Image (cartoon, rainbow, N blue to C red; front, side, top):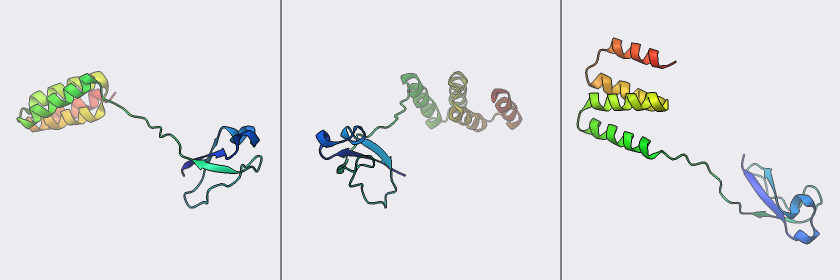
Length: 123
């Protein structure tokens, strides 16, 4: 359910609730509010600033992922696996750990070794 913001049409004649604006959860299908739920003064829907969380990769993470990709593209599976494995241990990145295990398989490592390795490092 989206959050909509409203503000008094005339802030000088508004209550503490709608003078500076307020937020309300409303289904998309609901009609916009026309009055404040506290003082019954006229309100208008306002366009709010978009707030979002952006997770950026560190330079080191990007460098490692690029190197792993280059090793994979050139068929150097053991190099890609080792780099991904070491970095996943350091950063606790499960996606990179899975990628390392897949590259170990492509490099011809024994599946028994891989399952033992994965169990030891899941702690």
